[in-house]
Length: 166
Image (cartoon, rainbow, N blue to C red):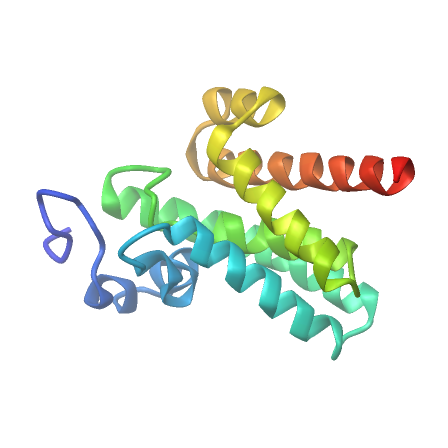
């Protein structure tokens, strides 16, 4: 923990590169953003999956997302313990995976994905209803990932309702 500044407990580039789990959980560096690291992680998930979707079939893409979820959970646990805070703001692999799932479910329309990005960030920040429940009641690395997955599902539900109504 000597590579983490004491006053803000922010991980450094050196910390991120000291272990593969830190590199993964800090979103390949997006978690080191000086402001809104969750937003940068969310953007990484959106653009990475948009790109990957053009290269992979659906089965491979979703298998990759499942693998990313499992690896991200492990990485978040390792990094959370190293930082002394399981859901440190710099841990953004949860946003990357959750937004990746939303993007994979809504291929094509950039406008639809832009709306889903805004909705997901809103749900992730405000933590309404089931998102807040997951955040409060499920702790550790699983909790880190779960509240973002619930926010992703809520995002998909709202988008589906909007498509159906309009």
